[in-house]
Length: 322
Image (cartoon, rainbow, N blue to C red; front, side, top):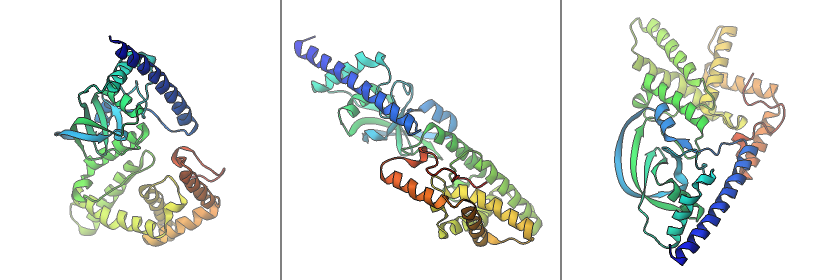
């Protein structure tokens, strides 16, 4: 190796040590904020989401910060593509030296799922490029087609929820019946409740119309006449303002249960508007610190702290109604 190559190799080794220190510090902050810095595994994504095909997108320029996972080396680097192991030193330093010497490195190879990318080949090149402040990288891209696309900040926990969502869509085909649908929960188990709601709705539709109701017909009618009216009431009352970190589907689930309780107590259906209003009044009366909790969480977000991972800000103000 020439003298200049040796110099760049030594510099690359020093930069690797710098990247490892950054990885350690980032890991500490991830722990303190209770958020995951782990890269997503493409194999796990494939196992949990229904991949219905793929297509070649050719050579593209890809934002590096949208590369969130890897096909085989997701444990070697963190979510920021900082190296997690000293065993990566030699290859990492070599790539850094080649970049410094203006070597013409080949494009990396990526898979695209939704808004994010996974590395098929080129993990070290991406790590070095990101450490050097490079914002984009050339890549040969293959898109994997799924019904529940991934988003930039999705964690391993989010992946479990999207698996449930994928199963729900496979059973209901709601994404084909109502392409604009967007039903996401912040905790597990919600989609099973929705399936029960749909089956109950199908049963009563059959009684009312004195005929067999197909699953597709029941799904569409439930979405149009049960789910959407309640979600619109949630939006009118700005109910999500009182439940930071929750979703419209979470509130639909809780208010639908509350609506059923009111029906059993009074003998009449209060409807989505009254059920939503009564739910909010009872919950906020029971937990008056929720409003303060909401304000403090919004302040944390403005200060750059992700409130989704920071737990309750005010002690005694639960997120979920009891």
